[in-house]
Length: 517
Image (cartoon, rainbow, N blue to C red; front, side):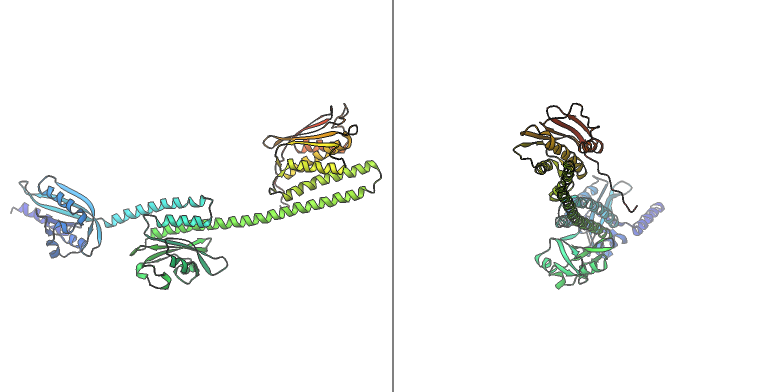
């Protein structure tokens, strides 16, 4: 052998023996004629065991035919190299992922003498890729879970949806069993609020547990996540005869307080993965957010109910107080002999009663923010007819009104104006006739803008009547309320009876001043 050939042989031998990649020389029968230490380590075979094997002995049966066909092509010179990636089985039945490369070795004359096999262990790389893929998929699951709180459905339904998605997640190794326990407020017990995949026995035995009494109770007590593997499994009462399993148990916490726990059963022989624990903690955080939102809603609803009751009581008391004032005015007026003074008392009493009627309507209404003003006008007219003791057969009331709701501030201002106009008509318009009509037309013209027409077929007004110069307190009040306060317009026609044509706007709510600031 020439010195150059010897040198090349030494280089190849050193490379072959000390290579960090598993290597083997294969003959044309695909027997492993020569192997290096690394390939023995990969497959956990001794040198003697390995050299007694064929290539098909180290390949999984499902891939064996494909590998042999490619090696056959190499031996015939049909291809120069063959490369693929597959899982390989160790002697102890363990699996590693590897890149398999096979190439021909030729002599100086170009004749194929051997096939060289290289097997590189890429298990760590493969695991990292799979872990990254799992993390990305679990993040996508989190995005799906975040949509659940957006639904306006009960807590139970939301938890059921979360557990259903969780146990059916392909990249999460559950035994398709999971449960959510919630700590009962004001006690040392917790209740299984939702479950998925659990058998009847564990559902019944674990439906109510003392905090601290089992693994789930321990997590509820100390607020620390827990992983238990198959090697920690202890058959017995606590596991309700479920076959051996592992568990992730994660606290459901909000503002440092444990609200409950999320318990997920794991597949056999599953090891703890940090990214899985982080995923479950994110799920637990979503559950905590749902619970806090539900509890906050309940607090708001309770508070709102209390405020509604209080507001009704306020309207009721204001109405009662106004009725007392009205009664006092009525009692006082009986002692008055002067007609002008008596009419002043009667007018004031009507104004007070009109405001009392508003509070009575709001007290009885389902909507405390708005008053059905069309209904109110009919009731107000009936009260005024009764006050001035005019029978309905003599003076008729005609109402043509749209269904309109007004806030209390706008309603009071408008009601006082209506009270004055109808009172004046009842007192003065029909002195020359016994068959009169008072009509009211109410409609909405635009957003927060309304039209109100009150008309009678009585004696009308003098030709030179000017509301801005009138000495009538009632009509001055009408002008002030409609034009100044309600930012509206008032037009009066005194021919063929009297027509008050009014437009007005709903008052904008102004926040009350804080007397403490």
